[in-house]
Each structure stands twice: as structure tokens, then as C-alpha cells.
Image 1 (cartoon, helix red, strand yellow):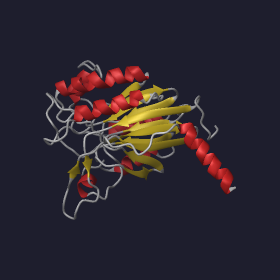
Image 2 (cartoon, helix red, strand yellow; image 1 turned 180 degrees about the vertical axis):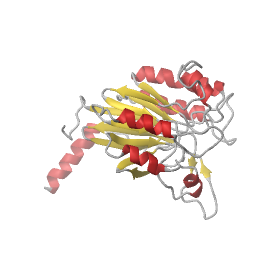
Image 3 (tube, helix red, strand yellow; image 1 turned 60 degrees about the horizontal axis):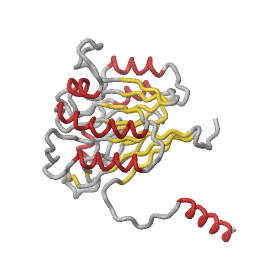
Image 4 (cartoon, helix red, strand yellow; image 1 turned 45 degrees about the vertical axis):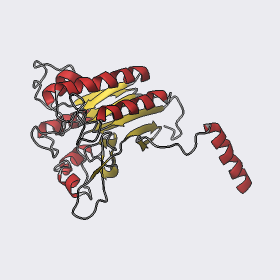
Length: 293
């Protein structure tokens, strides 16, 4: 497979995480209109005119698990996905509630395997790329856990390679964090996950939960912790302080031949420094290269 990707072999996935949509329009922490931030972000993505193959919402989709909050989320996500022609991939977070999540977003019912209270694990195929969703939540807890049954299911799923490899999505990062509170609430016993992933076709692990952007690796596989769409945790707060700040973003993940590239995208409204034709910038860079050569 060539490492040079053209339009025919490029896939673009957008990760939206920690949207924390509320019921009735309540502001998160009495400060943040999370639905407005989500709507603005989706309008920007659709308005870009760029190809997006899937929207991955990686947990904490609502702030309290209220059914109304999931309905408010769907009302803006589904039209955007339809306009893009993109698949929607939902994952559970610790602020989500399994029954409302399954009923309002996933069309589950009590006759599904395990019922509505079972972990939501799923497999999606997007143009040959496999996206595996693992539910790392435990009702009533905020740190992440995976059961033996889930890990056995994952091992069985990954035993069959996918044409373009696999992205693994789970809410809780399986890597340590320098932020004490984030580190405390990460995925517990990540070595159990690493043992399953070793030698698999998983190309990247997508997470949220931390409300800050970060990266690391598990079993040699890149781990990407996407920026939250609600608010940010300050990773360099004064010693002894835990601080949240206004600001939000999302992630663009591109499958470019043999490479998978994650790019954090700032979404907080800001003034534009310049806005020129892309070709004009390329022509300028090529001219400079010729002059230097």
C-alpha cells in the first residue's frame, strides 16, 4: 500500500467528545451553553465542504444522562451527518446513562442481548475501516473499567483483520496523565487492554474524558485524547489547583494510506489572521523553494 494518499484512498473521521448536552438548556457549570458550541461546530464542519466519512462521539454526550438531553443532541447531530453523508458512531461516557443512551441514540430495547443496562460495545465499518467501540463505563463510577467479557469480545473481533485496519474508541484514556484528577479517573488496569491489542490491526485509540488534548501509546499503538467540546481542563494550573476554562475543540482524523493522523481543531470563536486561496499559498511556498534552491 502506498503511503501517498489521494482522494480515492483518504478517509476523514471527525471526533466530537465530551459534548455534555443538558436537558432544558441548563448551562454547564452555570457558564457554558454546550448545545450552542456543538451546533456551531457542526455548522462549521458542514460549511467547510470537506468530505467527512464518520462522526465519532466518544462519550459524555450528555451531562446527566437525561433522555431529553440525548434528543437535543440527536436533533443537531443527525441533520449534520445527513448533510455530510457521514456515519454516526456513538460511545458511552461516565456522564451518560445506559438506558437513555441505548433508547434515544441506538434504538436498543430490553430484548437486545444483555438488555438496556449491558455495556454498549459495537463495530462499525466505514469504507473498509473498522471502528470498534468499547464501553469503558461502570454505572455510578467515574473511572474506567473493562470486564473480562468485553476483552474476550474484543480479542475475538480483532482476530479477523479489517481491510484498512481498526480504530478503537473508548471514553477513558488507557494512559497516565500529569493532571492528578485526570490520572485518577483514567482507564484502570490498562495492561489488560494492552495484552489484547498487541499484534492487532488497531491503528489508533481514540478517547475523551480528560477535557484536554493529549497523546501517548499502548502496546505501541498511538492513543489520542481529543479536546472536549464543552470546556477545557487547564493542564498547567497552579500547584494544588484544578481549573476549568472556557474553550472547546474537536479532532480531525485522516487515514492517509499507511498513516493515521490526528489533528486537534480549535473551535472557540476567534478573529481570523488571514484567509487566502489554498493554491495561492502553495504557489508562494513553491516559489520560495525555487528561490532557495
